[in-house]
Amino acid sequence: MNTNLTRILPIVMLLSLSSCAVNAPVVGSGKVSYGDSNAVETVNTDFGSTDLNMVASQMATALITSGKINQCKTYTVSKVRNKTDQYIDTENITQSIVNNLSNSAQVKSQYVLSSQEMQSQVDELDRQNQSGLYDQGSTAKLGKMQGAQCRLDGYVSNITKDNGQVKDVFYVFNMKLIDVQQGTQLWSNEKQIRKDMTK
Image: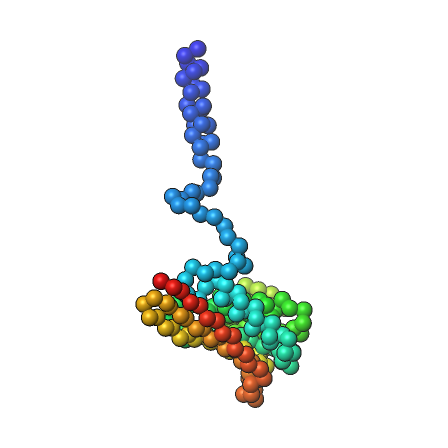
């Protein structure tokens, strides 16, 4: 009987240890909870998630409502420029505007890749056409991409005032729609945000 126990004991221990290796959630030392991504965020005066959502949504809505985007057969959106005195991930603002425009049933224009997105497209065309791995009858052909008739440009800037007791930050977000060939401005809009913090 000791022999059977000697054989079974390592198996039982192995099974016990392997059951401890279940993928349990990782828990940190602080209290963490999920928040509403659409809730107003007022942690400080920095440009935050509320500002990003508001600016992207309101700019896209204003452009759609104007009807000017549909004067363009194709359009692209340049990366929003950051002219503030703080770090802002303007790529998120840019992508949110693209998403709002692309997902609107009112926009009939076709979005084409921006210059920042173009490299992965060029790489894919090269892979299909120059690697020799693909049936040439099934590959995407070079020289067939659509150019953008219009380009949406934008920037965010700020003015900061601080007297030691109150910090006031005034953000200005500007966008304009430009006809690429003619160089004419078809539409422009501005969104202002003021944030105050008492110290």
